[in-house]
Amino acid sequence: MSHAMRKEENALHDNELGRVIPCNELDWADPFNWLRLAMLDLTRAPLVTLFYGIIFMLIPMGIVYLVSLTENHLVIAPALVCFMLVGPFLAAGLYDASWEFGKGRKPSLWHSIKAIHRNSVHEWAFAVLLLVIMIFWLRIASLIHAFYPSYISNDYSELIPFLAVGMSVGALLALFVFTISAFTQPILIERKVDLMTAVLSSINAVWSNKGVMLLWAGIIFVGVLIGFLTNFIAFLVIMPLLGFATWHGYLDTITTKRKRNYM
Image 1 (tube, rainbow, N blue to C red):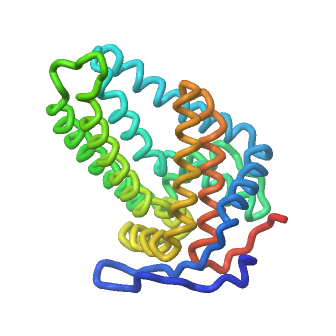
Image 2 (cartoon, rainbow, N blue to C red):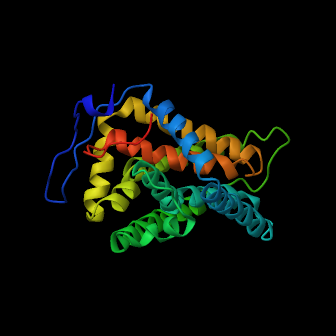
Image 3 (cartoon, helix red, strand yellow):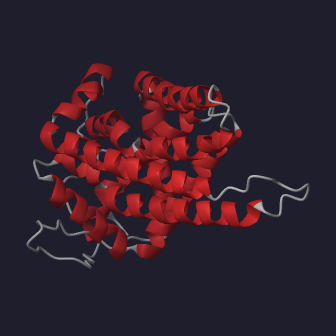
């Protein structure tokens, strides 16, 4: 379905909390098209890609190193989840680069860095919101850790309930964060709207396209998993790719009159 012919499909409407920007109905093939367009951005903006790729690679490496100094490896996973929670905020510069391509301009690294100041009050409010969620996750993780068995047998059977609870809570929190942040940052970058409008619009878009957005969340999960399995080296490419793709997903999902300069 072309960008111009998409039907609007909405689960939420304007309410006392804020305005809801309408969203479009997505196709199952859309996430793969976002990746295709993101690959074009990635190859055409090597400096921006490298800069943000290095940031996304070094931060989790630093987290693992600092946590390893405490000799408490059980907190590595919660710490890495914290990093993934703030990922949408860090990707603002990548969204800006794709936006510049869409306007027929060549993006610059400095312009992408300044993107965070375009709607600074609400973008920083979004960062605070993610920080609060991160703190909440750390508290939950510490409570789960309190039930960690003091003695482990050779078959590690005592770890199964502990890991199951931790993974379940982490997955639920990740889905919640994905719902409220899938398109929040792109909305705040492109439009002069308040944080609540951006969050409600993101929730509406995800809920109205649950199947396709779950597919997109699965693609993100696979990308992040590959990053973990490569000791975060793959993040050098994967995270910029996902960032660029998110911008194209935003253009397809959130109703806008903007047209792409893409084939």
